[in-house]
Image (cartoon, rainbow, N blue to C red):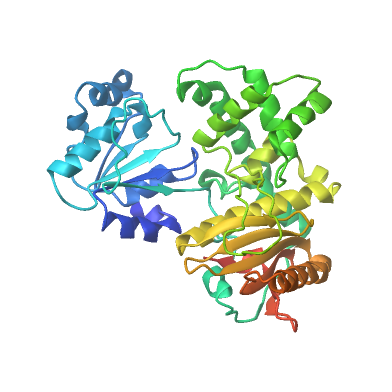
Length: 424
């Protein structure tokens, strides 16, 4: 690869750290998110198991003599290792026999069945999750505000150019796909559609060799798109498909297909948070539904900029999804985790970030500056209620917004930060 053309990714630092500790690492994530490019940047030799040259000779070689594909300068990248699952055990065995750190970088865009993989790789192969680009990585966030510092209660106020609504819509529809960053908005919208077509028509079958009803897969994906950034149950998805598409789909099929979507990294739900609150209030356990990138939801529903201009409610959910994609990337880079909060008293927090020391921070996500006051009041109200219930209150409160011309701390202590100022 031409290293001078490489656009740095937030995960780069973690890759370097892991290569210094483990014999091999496995970088997993959705297709087209930049895994191969990033892995190649950190490697000294490489082999591509999905290369069609010579009638897929690399894959055949890996199947017949897996040790041969491991030969080369280290770190050696083995791209799309799941095409030949026995490579996993071969790498583990090789690392055992030839002690040393940072010998291999495996990449995978799906999680294979465990059949044929004899060992977990614990202690030898460490897995990392890679996602589409955040706004900071794509150059659409100035990065003047660090999320890590924000979680510690530190913010240096700054002014910024206020985004207009159409620019925000363009960022959502384009998504964080590296190949779309320099394209015009109308061109960029074609990529997530092509992505979904490739997944549905090829990868769904290739992941385990089982034929599935592609029409029902599309129905379920569209229902997930209609329910992006919500906590709907599987039964609600079934009712939604019946109401919108007049089709029946059973519970087992939904569960099975959702599992496939997770294994293909199409979806990545936001887990519920309760572990550090210790409040007397019962917390709901539903996950918040998310595609790995909001552009996929837009593509499934054939959403256009004008449609979102005239449907601010849907735009709000998609904006929330984009922000939570970025918060997930930023938080993971410093050992934190992203959750959401919802209890049986109908109190909700859009995003919760739990730090490695057990402290947690609460974030509301709002598109317009006119929503900041209500969002701040909600955060302060929940914090007060948790304290009164002898729970562990958040150590930092923040409103992430789209259309604001400054990052600052309000008189009530709540931070306000435009998403286009944030970084890890």
